Image (cartoon, helix red, strand yellow):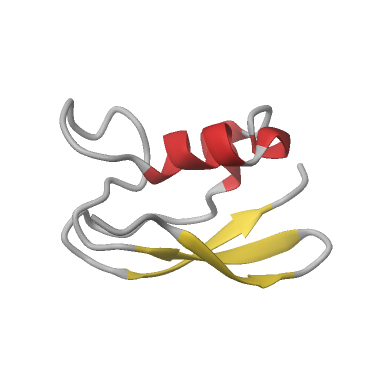
Length: 72
């Protein structure tokens, strides 16, 4: 399964490509990959932000772009 990847970076936010089959946030279900966890593991600066900075969510089966805050 593909991993998320960054499409664009700005000083206070970035855009992340979410693959289909990934949950956006932890706690949605006990199975499968989670973008929030991937952000915390891949980008240490996101660890302290609520939901790792995710501004919105996409359904598990939906691929698409997620806006992520890089700062509080």
